[in-house]
Image (cartoon, rainbow, N blue to C red; front, top):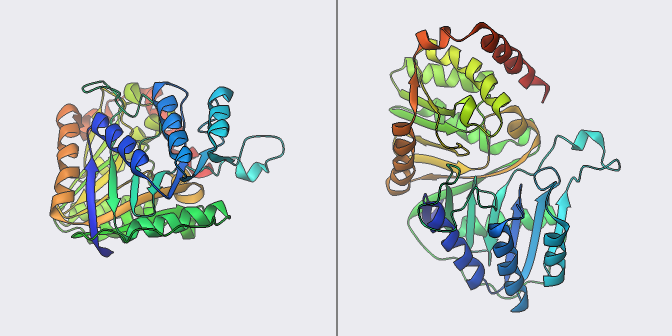
Length: 362
């Protein structure tokens, strides 16, 4: 991890929206973006207009959207990007010309870097379900982080390399100096390149006091399951929050996840399910000091195929902010007991078991 970072954990979805628009407006040299989903709604149109204004003042704006995540994005919005001078492309579009092996390999990142000195990374795509246009609006439960410092330079380098075209770069300001210890952890599409998931596994294995984990799509491999169980057995307070089937945007994943948590429950891991509000977050706090925020899920697609972007950090202040959000979600969730899990209806248990086993086909 690198020192000299400023980190702002963006909990409130309206504040996060305001901070994002402010950083777009203040960019002077470059804006590099990779998104899984760009929704054609009020938020999407405001976002595209802001990028167009940046291009008009001479900023090099490059946007990559995923071919599946943005499959239904309106042509008018794409024309608006083109007319504004934004350089944009689609990652692995789903067409007959795309090799079949690429159809399941998606760019699931939600990453933006401004002037190679400020980065936004987290679980929020661009759309009204992720960002609140006004204070207090109900949106999906998620969070992100704004990172200033050398880590943003490294993230920009990854994005430029992924674009495979290095633009002429103007003189950039030096990265600001701060106190937080931060590093980027990207998944690059492959089991040996799943650095975000590997960092999370390593942190779980080294936990001594607490592991507080929120996962929208929780289909962990055996290594992570064993690590969580081992932590619980050595006295670590291990808690996992997942969405209930009725409150998930992908119910079949939640059904499979429901089956998978049984092994954890039986061995001392506390599991909570959220019934109200769509839970889309992917974050973890360990020992009140180590934290991670980003797009990587604990599922086979994130670990084996997708491009993902996370930040990991050490620091009580940043960990406390993430922990605060965790506590808010846990307060609204219901704890699942081993006895309750065993009393699920037979058909639901059967379907969950089938889906759990099918996760290996991703």
